Length: 188
Image (cartoon, rainbow, N blue to C red; front, side, top):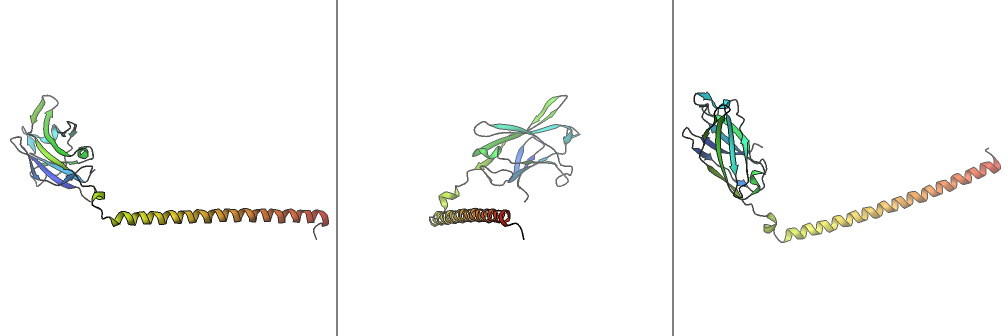
């Protein structure tokens, strides 16, 4: 399954806009992705020649930086593109995630900062709270039946082991009697 994408576009005037947005829920990991679109050039140089990074933080002031890797093909033959998968690091906290883009050059340093935009990490209801009352009862009955089956299987296994031990004893007794017979009367 291809992750659902939120598309963000960096415009010529350093504005970071969301053109589409998907629902992102707390605790999800790799269910969604962000597709970033960039002007193919900056200062008459391909954007891939620069260090382009995504910066983000959540409402707890936890954040990180991600260095973009660009796809070879242009998006819609107009934009350089890079995909960032949304991991459980980003979705660990409910609320707004603030993000922006920075473009820098090894020789001159920081060249550009975009404005900020936000993503919303939504709470997801706990399915146990919405489960019909009969469902836990059914699971409890199933659990009891499974425990009974396990106990029955254990009893059967123990009886098989006891029977095997008695058979081994009887075989040993018969073998012992045969050895005594051979010593007394020989083999004929």
